[in-house]
Length: 570
Image (spheres, rainbow, N blue to C red):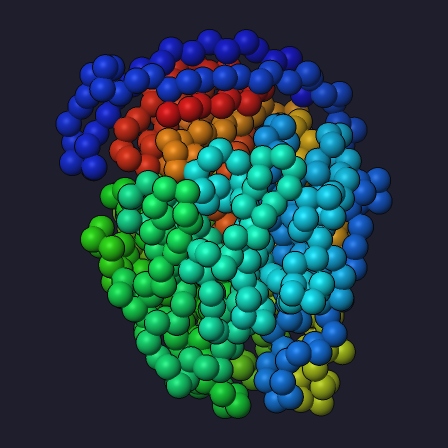
């Protein structure tokens, strides 16, 4: 890496009131606290744009096992594509830790990051290894780190495949306590999947949205499908209320008319995301769904949502994973959805759909358009978890996603096309800077033929570039050796109880790039990226930053030097 420069920043502060304009003086809007952490330069990498498999030396070792013992005969087996990981700094020591669910045949893992891409499993000492009432994990999936109680450390939420989900409070001493029974988070629907947190009503605390794939009970009760949970915490007593129907999410989110001739009709949602698609401050809701319609819910700002899905645009049909980011650097957030690219010789599962494979939906002032064909990202294989990632820190967001299937899981005579996905390689779409992408997974060294599930993209070794963790039956951790381009990392500390500043946006301007990032908690398929944001700067050595906090206040910084991590407190 290039020599690091000292911080030269001028702090300017302005404010707006609830998106209605206006200003505030410094007395009413105190300056944000800014801390910098300059890094020691790393040696020049031997190769450009290359990833190295460092799994064996990392200490991350497990094999997910599912016995399917408690799934009734004739019901779906949603455990096939499950497991997942939460990524975040649960011990507040400055690096990214991992919580990984095991399956139904062993303990979960809490991998403490010890630095230099070395991890130690401390799950047993932390009290999170065995979480089920009988000592099993009770099919826990899709974990998420989030500061639910607003005390400055990350708590842990685990979605339950077999109904029971868990909220574990961080005791700030390396251990967690199960507080689920007192929180109202008691689910009646089975087959939980991914979860996201965000302050959709802007009351300062974190609400919850979750999914469940193929819950057969939904066909008999099209009402509140237990997706959206409002945080009604008072004092230290954490409490959530199920408000899907009240908020306008249900019943439209449930797919009650199955076009595929499957045995039962059900909600088949996979991946939710809270994000600000339009110009107001209220987080909207993106919901990726399998077999049927991926959906977009616009936040009305009064506690309700409108289903504003354009059925002629959101046409992925077999949506799995999701990633949100500004791939074209035009100032608004675009939406990438992984799906299945069917072989031309096979009849698609849903014959009414005319488009298959991944979808890239470009956002222009709150309106989506399908730009998949012109961007070249359709070729998915059987896509799952995804990340927007700047592979080489050049300032343009690239895309990585895992994929694959195991032919042996389902009868080959009934599903012959599965064979084509058994040894499929992950996809790495490199942004060409002209609105198009080039698939280069093999060139980058991202070589795998696993049936992938979740993906975590994070700077695990704190060297200023983004590494990749692939969640499959066995994990793969890739160290990024991509380039010597400049970078800037930003960690926001919001006002309690939203201490992670969920919903905040960071805008960066440098000589050769304009970029935005948004703080989003839990947005990948069954997996989560940390809240720390990394900007690639190419050859630029300084940048201007604007932080738009969830309440509309802004923090402005100019002349910020590259090669460091900034911690900005509202």
